[in-house]
Structure formats: C-alpha cells, structure tokens
Length: 143
Image (cartoon, rainbow, N blue to C red; front, side, top):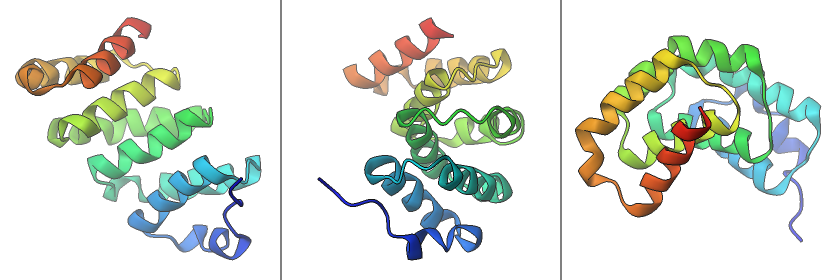
C-alpha cells in the first residue's frame, strides 16, 4: 500500500504553481489523503490559477477530481464558462478526451461547451484511437 502525500508537500498548496499543483492533484487522487479539507485547498488554489493552465494540466486536474468524485460546482461552472472553451480549442486529442470525459463524470454538463468540443472532434475524429472514441462517446451519451 502506498503512503498518502506528506503534510509538508500539502503545506505548499497555497503557493503552488500550475505544474506543481497538477502533480499534487494527481498524487493526492492516487495516494490520498482522502481528507475533504485537502481537496478544498487544492480546488481553491486551482480556482485562482485556472487562467494559466494548459490543456494537459486541466485534463489531469479534472481527471483527478473525477477519479475521487470531487464535485465542486462553483469551480466547475466558472472553469467551464471562462477557461474550458479556449483549452478545448487548442487541446491535443488525449487531453480533449480527458477533459470532456472528466467533466461528464463530474456531471458538469454545459451545452455550449459540449458543442465546442463536438466541433473540435469533427475536425480531428480521424485521429482518435478506439479508447479515445469510447471515452468521447460515453461522455456525450451521459451528457
């Protein structure tokens, strides 16, 4: 069994930049702690720096939230309106699939965002592998 992320790492959450914060999301999702207060601090920090995230970082953060069922509606709503459309427009396929699939798992459906994603998918559908297609179909069916 793996040990939870040490408290001295977690103490840096309020000062974490986008790369460090992304890594913390992934590590906490995989190893714990499962403490709601830790997730609240992580999400509060990502809310502050969301404007600077890359599509890959957003995908990893959202998938970490989805894996651990961390539904924070205020953050997700703001993220979907302000940042997700431009991230989707520039995302690599794997990151596009990760973002849309995670948002669907988090029950964070917004029609405008899924329309942007579907247009982007139409442009690049021939590049998707079977796993990516399955993720996207599942996300759109749930929506």
